[in-house]
Image (tube, rainbow, N blue to C red; front, top):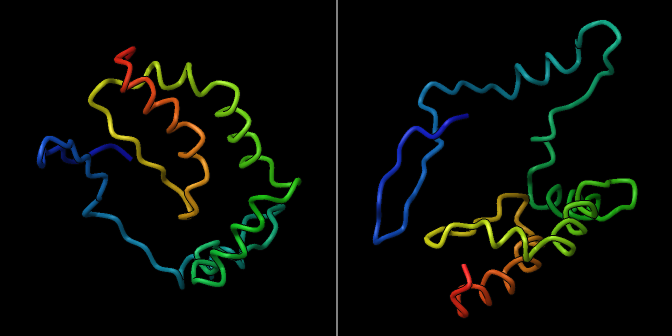
Length: 121
């Protein structure tokens, strides 16, 4: 998905990734997931979990030992936060995309703030 528009609002760049031609049908996705290609297991779209209860469940899942992405991301940020923030442009804005728990940004933000205060960007 490529950015479709860039505009400046009060000195903050906003990049819109909205797509006008995006078509989505949860019903169609469910039917497709129940009749997958040969050799592919049946699944349900994860969107079905996206109510308040589902988000809480997903949050718990992300911290299970078996769900490695969260722990790996945390480890990368703990070990490399300083080197990561050194590569962030001076006028950049930090945005954490995800399920809403905001667990990764606090691991990098102190390094980011310290670098901005000392002017070592």
